[in-house]
Amino acid sequence: MKTIDLKKTLKPYYTASAVKPVFVDVPTMNYLMVDGTGDPNGQLFQEAVGSLYSVAYTLKFTFKKGQAIDYPVMALEGLWCADDVADFLSGKRENWQWTVMIVLPDIVTKKDVEQAVAAVKKKAKFPRFPEVRFEKFAEGRAAQVMHVGPYSAEGPTVERLHRFIGEQGYKLRGKHHEIYLGDPRRSAPEKLRTIIRHPVEKAKP
Amino acid sequence: MAPSTLQTRKEYARRLNAALEFIDRNIGEEISLVKLASAAHFSPYHFHRIFSAFIGEPPAEYVRRLRLEKAAGLLVADSSSTVTEIALACGFSTSALFCRLFKGRFGMSPTAWRDGGYEKRKNRQPDRNIGKDKSLRLVYQWPTETDSRGRRKKMRKSPVVRVEDVPPLRVAYVKHMKGYEDKEGIGNAFQTLFCWAGPRGVISPDMRVLGMSLDNPDITPKDKCRYYACVAVNEMVRPEGEVGIMTIRGGKYAVGRFAGGDDIFKRAYDYMYGEWLPKSGWQPDDAPAFESYVGEPEGTPEKRRFVFDLYVPVKPLE
Image 1: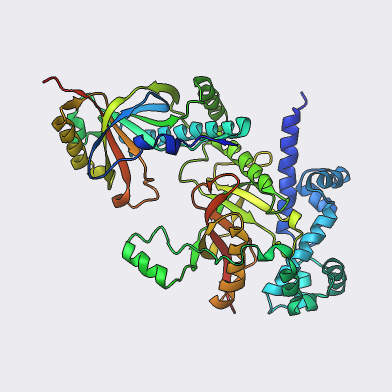
Image 2: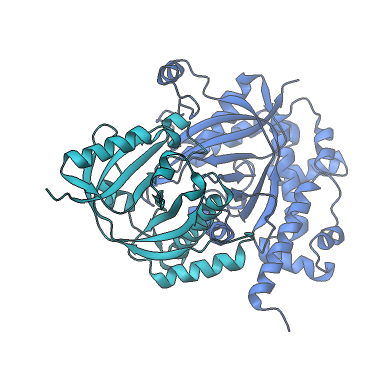
């Protein structure tokens, strides 16, 4: 059995300090992704996460069984945006647009993902199956910081990250990115650990 | 059109699971070949051969072995019942028949077994002293203990084992019937289970993965101990091929958390049954214990490290 230790090789991108934001240069990586709109506490979001994990674990065990390669299923991540940024501040959750995703090791190809999706569609008894796709994502330079606490209290941490980005001579670019290291069903809300990341570019002086 | 070989195999596996479940449920009753075959939807004529081929011993022999092993366990664990009561509860028609078969299998009378014979035999097991020099590693920490000061206090004065009310738990399982030391076989059972579970949406990071060890390796031959690889599932999931569905008994369990390498399992069972239970005011209830794994095994395939909670079903000592 060969093991791909993603947790080790990708460590710089999946750890962060709760005290001090840092810059990371995120390489181009392949992800499983599902898109949707609406309240993250709603049915659609839950279904999206459910189908994402079904495909992720189907792939993991296909590789383990078929090729004797073992790798960990990495943390759930989310990209967030809204047509009107004010909807985030005012909590108009029905307008929140999100992409839930999980990073894949390089050995997993688009074809592998399509096969896994077909297997899940055939075998799972889901009432609906939000479409899971394989996508290359080049995030590039970004700033990130660890948020410890409930998701609903992210506001000040996000502000702190944005302020840091401005102070360093950068500005925001692309989508707000969160990496959920804690499991909301297992951890107490005040202990949940979430990496808040935002891609950046040099601000023109 | 005739079903494919794969479908046939799956159907056979499903039916054999039904036969084994039938035996477990009716171990205290008379189990005729006809009844057993019909529980498995096979004709009695062929059933004997199919069972022998898949399980490795003929049905009558398998049932008799399980009855004797269950009785051997009860003789030691349940001191308030007489030999005759235990014989009848384990499906033997008379105490005389039981004593004869018992002697044939264990080389001593049930009474001698109860009066120290089992202990003697247990201590003769060659591999019993593996790891004995190391102290047993119980984990003095529960995930719910969020206050670190409280946790530190707990580390000093233990109750590391606690009795909990556990709701019934529905699980999908793949069985491995060739002993606990066959790591590869157990690994394969989990592989089969997870390959089935993945596309069915059963797996997520918060899934509960369990292992159920049905037999006492000090009683059952080491290469015949039954291990069930389990994952918790909801009411919608149905049995399929060699993946069976069962409900683990709800009720009182003594729960201890353990961490260590491959030998931790045996040591954990020894600790719970041999040290904790006798001092606890509880006795083991007549149901299998199970291991609830905390995270995936860590370390390398050659030197793995496990963290798990061992659940032992208990009832008050009358």
